[in-house]
Length: 450
Image (cartoon, rainbow, N blue to C red):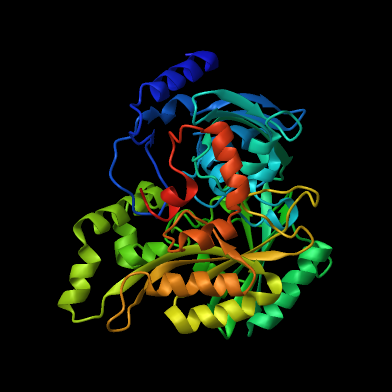
């Protein structure tokens, strides 16, 4: 089926949804951690899965919004190209990373995935297809689409920029005994683009404890004396603690976190050497672990085990937040005391275009921010209910001049939510592109969990 026919088929599906009935995409994978009401997907997202056109000379690609980064990278790497930012998990879709934000270790240079979009076709809530660019009559939707989470419409086609790559990445893992020293060096690298006279193309950090944290610095290389493989028995994040230097192929660097879902595979026993040898390699990937999470939620397996062991109830804490770099230490001290979660991922980012304003997720373009990712659970104090830790995190992030991504559970009061995420601008976009409110609004979808 050609692209215009796919568009027409999806428009027809949307118009056939009865007024007042929920509209959902029907797709095979999800990377959301928000509980939602169970509703069968009504729109066939698989119609927009695939690469439509790759222009190697111009370094751009036209791609369906439901295409996973795994498939997109597979299409571009043979041509010596990659998206400017590739989120860490293989089944994140391009449309999902743009409407719901994304980040990776190149973000200190090139920002977030939405900042490399040239144009996009969006099926709006009123079943109209619009092409949004930074300069046309739908520029308001172009700049308002990131962080809208499918509440203004769905990206069916996106044209994005690509970046040239080399065959290998040289990694240096630099240890620090305190966060303040690490943050100081991180800031200097992001300003200068180098460390010890070697260019830095990628940078992220791992906090294991207040006295043990690392910066992992990646540099493109045409050659490598050897390459490591972390898709088998060895585990990437453990190598950060033991290797000062390493080399990966660009493919394996891009997906270094996916095999063990950062470090979350330990919750399923996949890091136990005996079990790991028996665990099929094809199941050592984030989307399979996500299926195990879904089973656990459905049958409350972990909750029942904890109860039998006489342990307190625990609260799931799966969050990514951003704070200005000068506030990273304060947040980590708070998080450690509040939850005891470890390890924690750190990824610096700066807005690529200082003149752009992304309405629903504004950054101060002059400042360097750090994304802090933590994905685990913490025991609840006696008498406290679910939300105790997450609400404290939301309050601390606001106090430190940051904000959090909305892919996971949120507990904001509605007035506070719209204050943070520009309810005034959002309301104007909603009225223009979904006047009948066929789609949920952003608060309903991300906090009320409808």
